[in-house]
Every structure is written in structure tokens, then in C-alpha cells.
Image (cartoon, rainbow, N blue to C red; front, side, top):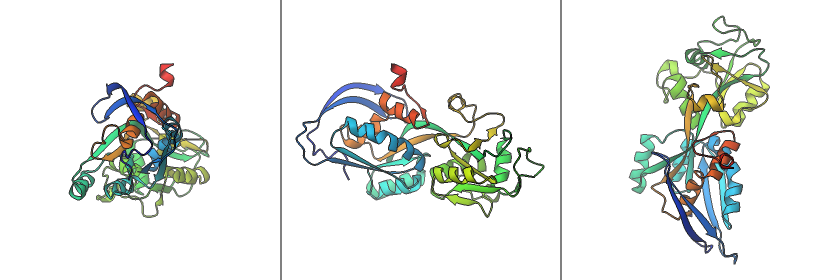
Length: 310
């Protein structure tokens, strides 16, 4: 664990204090002067959500460029696994694509004496996707989407669905258990994050995948498939389903007209010590540079980006 261990003789100069709202933490800008004389390097281990992994993988290089001697390792293991790893002391920061659960917080406090602290760094929408063999836009209600995923509607030829040029049995593609994306979809669409009620459970032959990219790839190559991914994973080869006439876009998530949306989080064990590497990494993502890379990775910044300030 690193948690701010200073072995590289960095000197910090605090230059600004900006409060960014409840649940978002505090950003304190700083300048780091590296003495360039070698020594042990900093290491920061970040694990969890494969959705947030896309942000952190992209931001790791500029973060390390701005912090000589720092090495950041990113591992997409799923939100639940990442939080569990954080509680067990096997990573420094967890990535999560859903809010921390009360059970996780209780486990953390019982095990370590500290509560989990979540920082909302971005917004995201969950896009329902189908293969681009579709000949027109598929526009559904949340109830119709739920009926597809629980198996009530099982064929593209069903009269309960509009004709968009797809046919045959529907293959439902979902995230694996422990995924924050799965929990969010279950809560907002299936009506029960824990899927305890029968109609909130996926159809028996639903295909579980361990990442957003794997769902995208399956739907991209299979005209019978339907799945869900974070907004940052939309691309050529799939079509997004409109919900009650609303397409999932940056604009419709910002104005909240698109209904399936969520926050994206970095999670720490307790409040990071001011000046520690964990503290700096979290707060850097609230800076104009950090928010720029959130936007560049396909998600929605919650504070001004670097390019907004030019």
C-alpha cells in the first residue's frame, strides 16, 4: 500500500482551495517539484469498475507525466470486487460505477474501523444496444426493456415489439454478478438491484460478460443480441435503443431527459490524508485536466474541463 508514502522527495505547494459540492470532495490545486535525484518511486494500485477503468486508463499517463516518479496500475475487476479489495488492503483506491452499498460500508468499518468515502468524478448513462443490422431506430419503454431482459418478450418477431428488421430468438447479454453496471441496470430497469423478485431476474439463458467491451463485442457480431453498456462504450457496429423517444447522448444525460443514468466514483478507505498520493490522485480528477480526460474517454464531466477554459 502506498497511501502517501513519500520516497521521491516531492515538495508540495498548495495554491487553491475549491469546494465542489456534497459528495464530490474537495479539490486543492498544487504544484509538485521533483528533485530528479532518483530514489524509490511512488506506486498507486487502482482496482474495480470496468466502466471507470476506461477513464483511469486514459488519465493515468497524463497523471504520471505530471507526477514524476509515480507509477499507477489500473485493473478492471468489477465494482464489488474492487471495493472488497480496498477493504482487504490490497489496493489503494477502488473504482465503482454505482454507489457504495451500506453492507460494504459496514464491512469496511467492522474490519478496519474506517468508513468508505466515495467521490463522484463523472456522470454516465447506460445505453441499451442492439446490432446495427437493425433497419430503423428501436424505441422502447422501460417496461418493454424489462420484459425483454426477463424473458417475457423472447423473439424479435414478437408483435409486442416494433419491426426494426431483426428476427429470431433474442439473446440477452448482461454483466456478471458483482458488476456496478449490472447493479445500476437492475435497480433502474429491472426494478430490484438484488433481483430478488421473479420478474426482476434475467431470462435463464442470458449471457453474462465480465466487461462493457465484451458486451459491445457480442452485440456487434450477433444480430440477435441485446445488451447494455456505459455511454463511453458506444461505437460503430451497434445501435442505441431510444427510451420513450429519447436517445442516450451527452446532452440528454446532462438535461436528465434520458432516464438510465448514474454517477461514476473513486472510493477510498476513510478520508485520504491531505498531501498523500491517494488524496492527490482523487482530487486531480476534479481538476480541469482530470475532467478533460473524463470527457475524452466518452463520459460526462461534472466540472469545467481544460478545453472549456481555453
